[in-house]
Image (cartoon, rainbow, N blue to C red):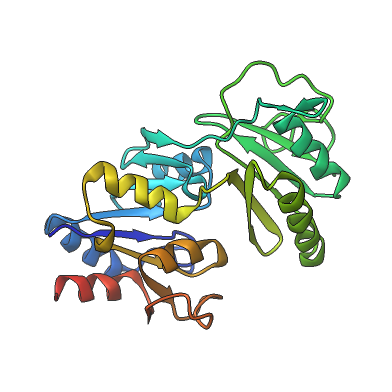
Length: 262
């Protein structure tokens, strides 16, 4: 029997800026036993490839990024993507431009569109021309030809503003997009795409039964995968008291120990 164990990164696998040695050792034993371990994160591809390049994560069999919309192997090469039709006509413009225009109207701080290997940044409070080494675009800009966006994201100054923006975007773009909120931040993927969906596609490709998927998470965007499979919530995390997981744990090593003892 092969298990898939999928862990969120920030606050779950990486706690306090590092991965605990006990968890590193446990993951090594888990993979040596023939099981599959990977990270499932809301970070987009460019950000995750930086993590891989800097060696800030342990060896993995897969990495599902962009909140389920992009799956990579352990070296950061794409296995599959689930882009949304950003270039599709939408009123007098395209879906992507309408979405970014709405960001500005809703008073966001910054956000962007992420592709398989590129990112476009947009910002309310930064001058056009650049920020943190990235070009900052405005809604009137001609983005030029590019691949379909895999994920869009944005954040607002306050939780109340983010709550309002999430409600508006779900109402106006819900037929095309799925906004997932984590506090002041929104990750926006195509309809039906989330961490649970990304894991389902990966498991089917690897011919692993869905009943053999175990997940570990700590935050709101982990809820779909915690509910869909055998969910383990980090005891100190925001979702630990919401009843969305089968068990509570302190670190990923706890789940590995449980699985290897079965």
